[in-house]
Length: 113
Image (cartoon, rainbow, N blue to C red; front, side):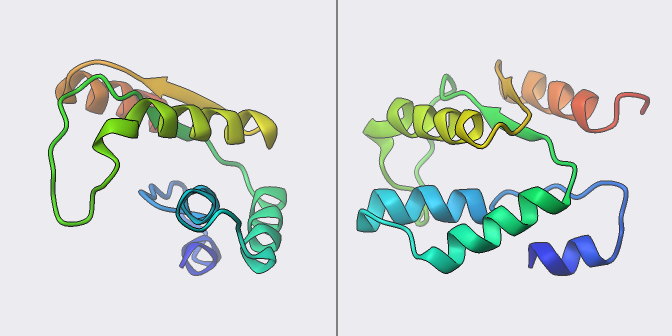
């Protein structure tokens, strides 16, 4: 999906889930990550300009059928932070209430808008 979106050459793509998320969740759920995911991630980070927005976990937990690990939010946040640092990827940590997060995110994505 990421390659398809990038092939269209838009100025900005916002993704909730990418290969980095697949790496982390594979490691959390299964204890390892398949090499093809790691290889694909290496290929995508080498080919593009990206900025990650890492949301802190200070807002209240809101359960839904796809969410899990309510008690591990701090640990998961730290895993994401460590992976972003390991791969030397640019990221900003987003804080505050939902409105403040949206404002901060939009300012980082399109500062002139």
